Every structure is written in C-alpha cells, then in structure tokens.
Length: 403
Image 1: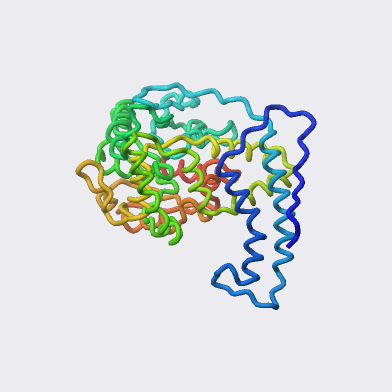
Image 2: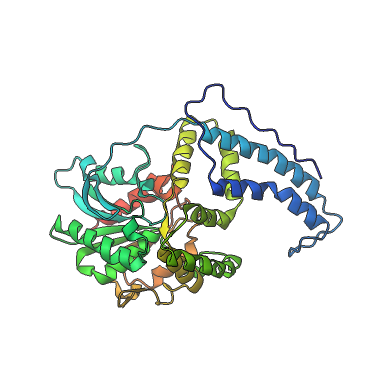
C-alpha cells in the first residue's frame, strides 16, 4: 500500500476568528474515510467479507488508494477552510409571543408589510435548532413567507431544560405544542395552517388528529411515516444495542448527548460528509462558500434530546415502525392519518437521504386529502438551498393561498 503521509494544509495568513473546534461526527467521518484504503487492501487479500469477491484481474485497488489519499487531503483542506471562515452577523431576531419552559413561540410577522398577515404555525424537528428555517436574509423560508403576506409563528424548542429532562414525545405535544397551537389560533379566532418539518411533521399530524378545530391545512415537509424505508437493515439491527444506554440515561435523568445524535446521523452515509468538504475545498464561489459555512454551523450546533424522546424515536419509530403500524400513541390516542380530514400537502425531496421519499410517500395513500410535490433537492436544500425558492417555497405558498 502507499504510505499515508498526509500533509496538513497551511492555515491562511490572517485568521478572521479562532478556528472552530472539530465536532466528533466530523472526526468519525475523517477516520472512516481514512480507513478506506485499508479496507480495499483487506478486500483485495480476501480478508474482508464483502458480497463481491476480489479477483486478480481487478486492478482498481492501487488507483482507489491513491484517489483516497488525494481526496483525503482535500477533505483536510475543506475542514481547515471551514474552521477559519468568517461568520455572518446574527440576523435581527423575531420577538417571542409566549414561552413555556425552554420552548418559545416566535413571531416572524414583524417582517411582513401586509396590514393583516395570515397567521400560520411552523413546527420544526426537536433535533437540531429551528433556525434552519431562518439561516440568512437570502435563505430564510420564514422571512419569505412573511413577504408573501403570512404571519409565520415558529415554535423554537430551544435548549433542553432541567424540568424537561424526562419529557416524552407526549409531553412535548401536550405540554408545549398544543398550548402554543391554541395561543396561535386565538390570534385569528379561527383555525390556521400548520407546517411541520421532518420530525415536526409527525408532531403536526398528532396535533391535527387531537385538535382538528384549530388547524385549517397541513404541510408536511420531509416527514417520515413508514420507517421501513428510513434506515438500512443493518442499522435497524444495531439500534437495539442502544437500549441499555438509553435505559441508564433515563434512570439517571440524563439527556441523550448531542455528539451521539450527530454521529448517528453521520452514519447514515459516512462518505457524504467527506464528499461535502472536498467540494467545499475546491469551491471558489464566495456566495456558495458562505452558504456552506452557515449550513455547517447549523448542523454542528445541535441540542440534546431527552433520553425518553430518543428512546421513543429510535426504538419506537425506527426499530418497530410504530407510526406506520398505527401503534404510536399520544395519551389515549393512537395517531392514524386516515382520521385526519384536512387538506394536506406532502413535500418529499427526491434526493433526501435523511427521510428517503419512500419513507414519506406512504402518507399519500393514508391521508384522505393529500397532494404531493417532490422538489429536486435534498433534505436541507429543500428549505435553505439555492433551488428552494422555486422547488419548495413557492409551491407551498400557492397551496396555503388556495381557498
């Protein structure tokens, strides 16, 4: 094998800020990428059992090793470029209408010029922060909605509070989401549209079944339902190994760590992270570089989950597919989309690896009044990418404005 003597990239002569620390999941991706040449060599020698055996006429291994060494250097350069990149000034914050525990209801209607903007509620995932919907002046779904005459009311779950350490999904729905939904509905004295993103879409479905009088329409952005298609079979086999750890966290009233959560997401496609940073290392466009940094900062700024929520999602949703099997329960209600008679728009990106289209499209045949659009984007690109305006923002606005 070629020696893996990888020179570190030289830092820029003038650093605008101190380098950002390297998150654990990036280190995992780097080590996985670095192990590729070793794995190829073992496969060549027949020491690594793969479905495709090595035969002598296959001469790809030396080339692949050299390719991996070259690309790994670009990966390192991409990481250094990211760590040393300048950051944008924080956006003007939306005011808080109501706070319950660590959860806030933020009013983005202040960015609308309409005399009476139409309220709508946006429910993000409990995983990562809500500002994926408001990353920058140019890439803010919420500010776009405000410019179209809406009053977006964002649920920001915030940091996990001490009083929320033992929260279950039922607690988040009944003690946070539903009171905030009722408060939002009082602003119009009428039902209002609700948008749920990713995990937030499942919470929106629960709210729609339990409080249909408060909701007029549903938009489900990249919302998984049939978790058979959400992860690989080998991942489903490994999830039960987390059960003793989750049980220990619950017994000690400790949260599920951010680093472990991000590592789980990285493991969905280990080589996607190096490929992203390799492209960033080679990118010369200033605007694209700035957008990359904003999105990566969001990805690397996760929040801890309560152990009970992590257990319910990993073992209930991903392992036992409780939503699709009509076994997901909120208090006495088993959440069943066939009981929801609201006009619904299902938005499932064609290139989504976090929520593959097959995991979301099962809702199309279950919800009585559902339409589907499939943006030509990925999970994050749908809400914050260069194509988001045409592919998702405009079609969603059109659906919301229909009478």
